[in-house]
Amino acid sequence: MVRTPGLSGVYAVATEPEYRRRGVSGAVLERVRRDALECGFPRLVLQALTDSYAERYYVKLGFLARYVSRVWRR
Image (tube, rainbow, N blue to C red; front, top):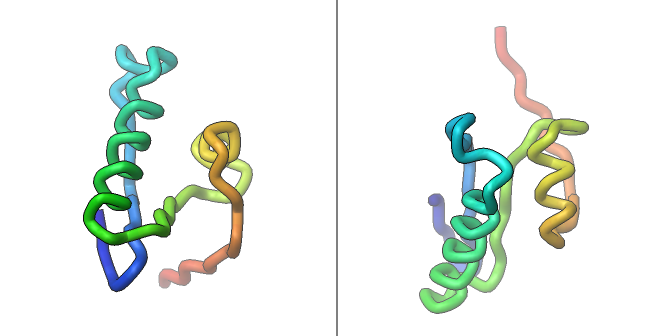
């Protein structure tokens, strides 16, 4: 987790195949959200590739897509 004043971020998350579709990710994200709030970080930012399973899953959990960031590499 990355934190800056008022903002927490969760990046590069993955779930082992045998634990997928069992509610593990949702439970972990809910715990992260509560911990961030309790520590004074009211906003939680998640990173996902556009049109990915992760993006659709985060939307299903109630997160909103607010911006798209381009990543450049050579």
